[in-house]
Each structure stands twice: as structure tokens, then as C-alpha cells.
Image (cartoon, rainbow over all chains, first blue to last red; front, side, top):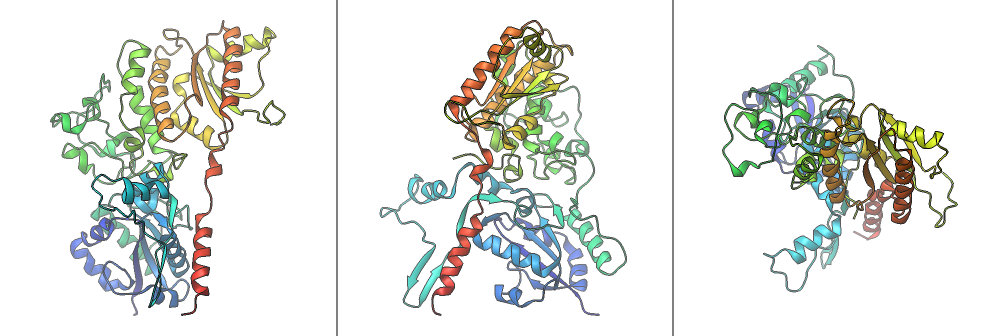
Length: 323
Length: 162
């Protein structure tokens, strides 16, 4: 029997999602037993023109990680959509914009100005900026067109499933691969289209083993300022922990080792805007006698966008800053 | 919404009003025959503390030019301390919106009791004029299909002989 076809692509991402797939350890043998890799720039030498030559729907499973940052990302997203039967927005960047989505506080020109002109450690006396096209004697070279607004994969193409996480946890990847392999073999159903897969019910808070009591905080602290208590809820210690507004599935790995949750698993089921929900939560548990004092403490959160939308700005209600 | 204002712009405002105080304040303004601009769509909430930042963002994203939240005076909350939550959420939401490039004053928090029909009318009048001065927000107007710009680039490339 011929094997199923597997593809993985990185758009605007760091490459951590590729590593997380290898982190499934011996399970990778199951992948090899069931799939032929037909496209995976990080691991195998295929060219874009190979993909262009495939029939529509040729790829059985495509794990697409990374956000849509430029024209190349968008082109590949559209191409892989045509060629894939099941396409998964894999990891935070593809699902909700991820860390690169924070670039939506600026536009492309502002980012280029910072990187190529204003950065204090820069040595660029002639003010050279990257050009989208450059003519050499051998021909014209082209760079992708950088967008002003980072987009999620679902803002670009039709997505079958969403698998959040930065990166998705190995045990969740293994579970999802089992389900997909069984479905491809006709031994089981696929989840409903549009489902978030590779997650657990409820929130990160629910998975967290720390001792939780009534939440009342009189000031916010940051993780470098003190050594948190090993048992007590981090939010109760004044750290902004995204656990209450984050989908479960990671096994609360960060809070277990004393790091507040940063929210990479995205909004829990039923929540429209993760950052707004967490902002409302945090501001509600401030303990001070007067509205003025409460307001002062609330406004002391240093960077609301970076704190509450660390992984989800591109997928939030407002999506970006107005510049 | 008609566009026959002095500068051709009629602000579209959303007001989240607590049902125990501010909504009754609005009723009092009406039964007292006080005049104030018709630009604000009132939405009755059980408490100003029920207003999540999500509601404010959703209103702005869907076309509101400004959002008013009005609740009971501190100490008067029907649910004891709901408006203390509002007191914390509001400045943090304001700070978030400022980071996202909104002008200060697009959102406003006021304490309006059931007896303050006159204050309600004054707040809505002031807020309408404040937003009129700021101009339309038009949040979604900034989004465009950037792939079209890239397609032009690709077409130009294909026109070059190999």
C-alpha cells in the first residue's frame, strides 16, 4: 500500500514547531511508516516547483506553521491549501499570529526604519535598505513583499484545524497524528472542521497544581523581582499569569516551574478575545480601598498589549495598532 | 446615521449603562424632557462591572466612534463592589487602546446615579461633542488586501524575459 503524503511548511515563524515535531521521539517511526514526506523545507530538499506540480489534494496532511508576514508566506499558504486534503494551522503563529503578530503595533516601514536606520548597534552609514528587486548581470533578484499587517493563517486561507502552542506539546502532536492516521486509514473519524485540536478541556489554570485561594492583589510584580513561592498561585503573588484565559493542553509546564503562563495556547473555548478577557480578569482582582487607588494600580501594568496579547494580537478583535 | 452635522460627521456612540443607576438616570433625563444628542445607542447591562474589555473592543471594531460606560457612584453598587472592578478595568483598557493608537477620550467612564438625569444629559452631550472633535474612528478602514500589491510585483517579474 502506498503511503500517505505529508507536508510541513514554515511561514513567519522561528522553526520551533519543526523541532517540536521531532520531539515526539520514537513516534516519528509511526510517521515514517505511514507517510511519505513530499514537502518539508526544514527537513527535506523539495522545491516550490515540486509542490506546484502536485495534483490538487495530493497532500494528505499539511502542518502549516508560521504567520502570514509577506507575499511569499501568502503564496505558499494558498498553494498548500490547493494541494492539501487536511491542512492544520500548526502552532501559535499560524493559529493566532504568535510572537510575530506583535509586529502589528507598527507597520512595515517603521520596522525597516528601526532595523536598518535607527537601531543603536547598527553600522549602516550609507543608509542601505533591502530592496524588493535588484538587477544583477545574471538577472533580476526578488525578495518577498513585506506586509504592514501580520495575518493569521485563517485570515488568509480556509483552515481545517487549529493546533495552538508555542510550540505545540509533543504529547499533543503524537495524539493528533494518531487520530489523523486512523482517519486516513478509514478506522476513525476526523474532528469537526474548524476544531481546535491537540488541547485539553478548560483552561491552563485548571491543569495547574498550585494552591489557589481568593485572588486579591495590591500590586503587580514581575518575575525578575523576586523568587515566587513554590506552592501558591502565581497570580495571587502579583505576577500576571495568563492561565485563567488560556486554553489547557500544555500540562501547565510553565507555572509548574515558577514561570507565569504567557498564553501561547490561545483563547479557551467560548472566549472571543483572549487579551481583553485577561485584562478584565486582572483588573477585577485588585484589592484597594478606593476607586482611585484601584485605577492607579491597574494602570501600573507596564505593557498591556505585550502582556495580554503576547501570542494573539493578530487574531484579536482590533488585530493591530493604528499607525 | 445621517451625515448632516456641522463637519459632515455624526458620531456613532455605544453606551453601556448599569441598570440600577445610569440607565434609570437616562430614563429620568427622558421623562424630564431634557434634550441631548441622539448619537448614543444605550445598552442596558446588569452592572458596569459586567462590561468586559471585550465589549468595548467589539464596539470599536464594529464601527463605534466612541464608547461610554456609566455605572453607580462608588459605594452605591447594587452588587456591593461591581463598579470597583470597572474602576480597575477602565484605566487598563484605556492604556491598551492608547498603545493601539486610539486617541485619548474615545472611551469614557462616568458615575451617574438614578437621580442624575441632568448629569446623564450633560455627559452624553459632552461626549458626543468630544468624539465629533476627534472625528470618525473607522477602525476597519486601515485593513487592505496587501496580497494585491504583491501580485502586481509578481506580474511585473513574469513580464521580464528569462
